[in-house]
Structure formats: C-alpha cells, structure tokens
Length: 229
Image (cartoon, rainbow, N blue to C red; front, side):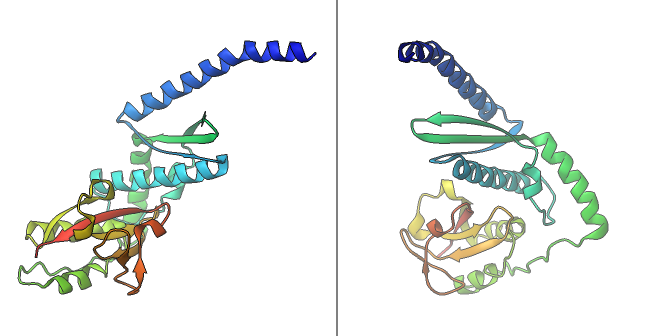
C-alpha cells in the first residue's frame, strides 16, 4: 500500500509543478498588462497573505485614482475590491496571494460614485495654502499638517512645488534622501495617519511630538517631500 502511495505521489508531482508554473505565468501576464491594478503578498498563512495583498491593492487603486482621475471627493475604497480576482501559489513554506482588478471596473465605479457624490455629498474640505515664497519652513509645515486626506495632497503639494517652496516629492519607493525628507503616511481609505519629520530609522511625529517611524504603520503608504532651505 505504501509503495502504491509513493508511486501516486511521483505521478502527481509533475502535474502539480505544471499547475504552479501555469499560475505564475498568469500572474506575470497580469503584472505586465497595464489595464489591471494588483496587489500581492507572500506570508506564512493564507489569511495574512490575503489581508496584506488586499491592502496593497487598495493602495494601488488609491494612487491610480489620484494620478489619473479628476475625482477629488472622498471614496470608500474597500468595496472596490469585492469583485477582485485572485491567484494563490506556494513559495517554499510561504503562501503567495495575488489579487487584481481591471481599471475599467474601477472607472465604472468612479463614474457611479462621482454622480452620486455630485448630487448628494459635498467634496472634502479644501486646504487653504499660502504659496507666498517668503514663507518659513515652520509655517509651511504647520499648514500641511492640516491635511486630513490623501485626496487633498495633490492640490496642496503641486502649488508649493510650483513656487519652489517644496523642492521635490514623490512616492515612498522613490525616496533617495530619507534624512532630508518629510513623510506623510496614509491608510488604504485615504486618511492621513501620521506626519513625520526628517530622519532615517527614527522620525519625530510632528502631530504628537513623540519619536515615531513609518514602519509603525503596517499596510499604509507614504508620500515624501523636501523643503527648500
């Protein structure tokens, strides 16, 4: 009986490997297709990997909306991934969870939400930013700390950058000078979670006044910026 079981395992193994390779090919195809947004994570359990991947997908959606859409109203983003497809593979002893959604689906949801927002809901409060070039860094930081939503950032940062008050900015992954960069940390719903000062392993939280770090905000994204001296 044991011998038969071993034979069955040897027979099935090539098919399992073929299925794994096929899944990886599909994942790579989606990642290369610019019509999709995706999130992925590789962790010890399916629950952990699924939760983290979905958070990453929400962040991808939020950043894409900010970059490619004129919609500035607050959205409840979680429902956008309810119909997302997913693929699961194993990597050694870890579980890789890959979830994705077509941009066209998000666009359709934006259109419906936009019409609804225009008819029944006000847009988020705007932040009045003084772009006078004579402003001090302290004044600029005080104004920016008033930002409450990721969707307000564009209307705040771009005018300051155009005036030369902000010298450079970008997504967290593009940051090359952490010791000279401030961080605005936001969660998948677009709420600002922290405003961190310049630093590397430790930064001062400019809202609470205590030592903090972007690594304390799991599942969140961040925008960095530098001020002209």
